[in-house]
Length: 260
Image (tube, rainbow, N blue to C red; front, side, top):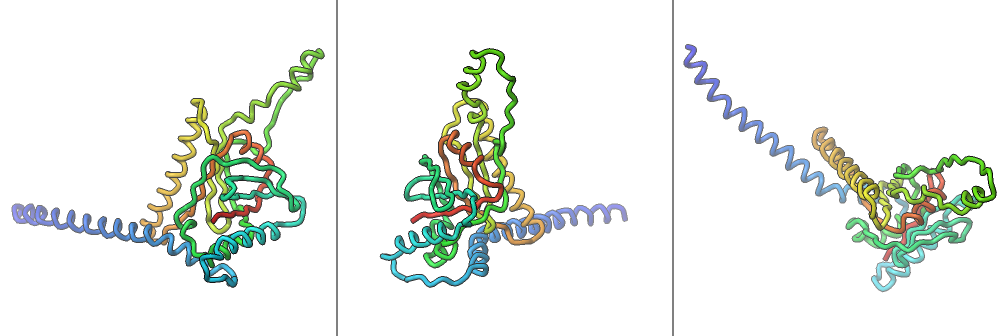
């Protein structure tokens, strides 16, 4: 009797292992399908929440229509005294905008647009970028308002030194993430990582990004829910300029994006 039971148990183990492997394979295939379909779902989500805007179906007019969308977005910015961010890809510039005036501008050394944004249909581009995008969340490696402790100078020499000495805070590694209300992630980073502190901050920033996406993907797989696609815009510029831009922006700024 015992021999028969041992024989049955031995026979069950390969079957259970086979079932487990099949289930795992189904989950993996399901997850990959959801990952592949995520951009399609994101576009469908945008389409449902956008107003219909008349667009000329003529490739010759695409660049003009995008420029008009850019101008409309600038005109739609709040009229009150608030600073907003302008991303102008054709000009390779990142700037601050207030009351109809560009008050600060820096040249970007690198720009990378998400493939979904690059291939966005003309009608959806105009619908998406003819108005400012609201920033729903943000985080950065630098503080918004630096706290500086200073000792009152005792001599004229100390006073001169305190006035002319540079602010060391501007040399902190600058890595910024802005997430708009429609799910676009703006990853804004310094263009040089010369020191060990810079390199460590760079690794930490991108590792956090990969971890965040991996967690989102596996959570969607386990819960059998749609994977939330995150269209990404990567921008690089000088660290001091980025520090000035980030600290000038309000907690929830508007972002105007223009690309061809």
